[in-house]
Image (cartoon, rainbow, N blue to C red; front, side, top):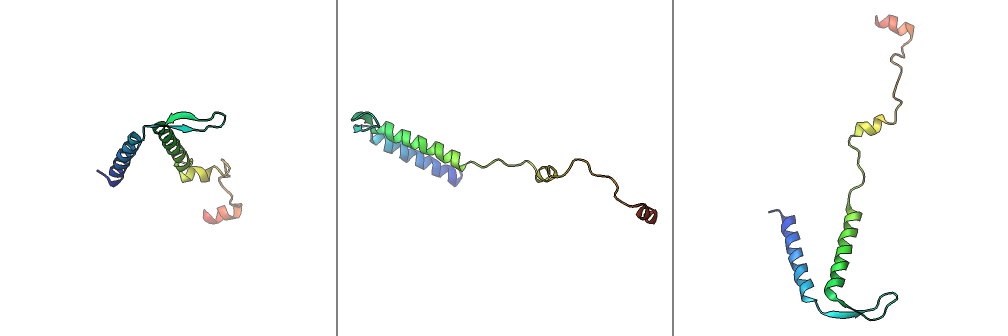
Length: 94
């Protein structure tokens, strides 16, 4: 297994143990309601979930282009004149 996978498994196990150890109810004061009995498990779990979602949204990569050439070619006109040589230059080449 990779080190990253082992780290994720260990953190998940420790987090699960921590959540299961904090099952008792506590009183929380919400914005409009006072002293609502809520399980610590639910509060900590929701905070962790919100943290993971925000971390994913902030950490995901920006939109990338499939090819560098496509980006460059988009800045130039589609059709360029085939020959910009003067008659004198054509005679010299021939």
